[in-house]
Length: 197
View 1 (tube, rainbow, N blue to C red):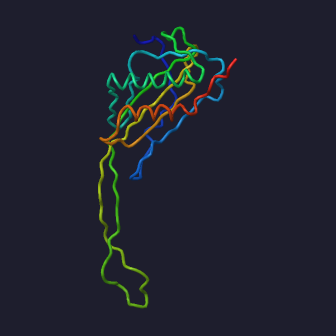
View 2: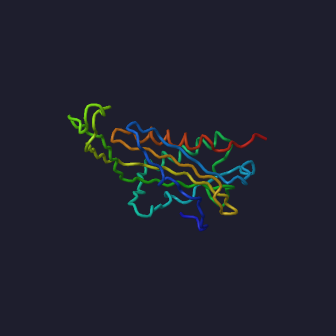
C-alpha cells in the first residue's frame, strides 16, 4: 500500500559514475542534509511495497527487481539500521523517518584505443627518437552498470535527509545475494548511529 505523502528526493548522481578500469570495484557515494539532527529519530518504516521508480533522461533504465532481491535489500537495510539503534515499525505514519530504494541498470560501451607503430621512420636518422606512431587499434567492450540507491526522509517535513548509492559494473558471475549485502553494507557505512540514551 503506497503512502499518500509526496517525497522530494535529493539529486541522484548515479548517472555521473563512470567505470573505466577492467577491474571494477564498487563505487560508493552519499549525501546528507547537514541541518538534520539524527538523534531525534527513533523509528523508521518503508515507503510502499515496491522500489521507487526512476527514469534517467536520455537512457533506458531497468528498475525491475525480483521479489527475492526486494526482500534481501529490505532485510539487509533493516538489520543494519537496527544495529545503529533505530527501530522498524510497520507503518510510515508511526515512523520518524521513512526509507525507500531504487535500482537501475544501464548498458554502456567502453572504447579502448591503442596506437599502432610504423615500421619505418619518416625522418632522417639524426631526428630519430622512438618509433613513429600511426593509426590505432580500437577495441569496443559493452557492459552493464548497476546502481542501488537508498533514500531517507523526515516523515513530518517530507524532506530528504540522507541519500546513499552504490554503482558497479555487473557480471553474469555476480551472486545477487552477496552483491546486495556488500552494496547495502557499504552504502550505510556512513549512516549516522543513534546515540544511546
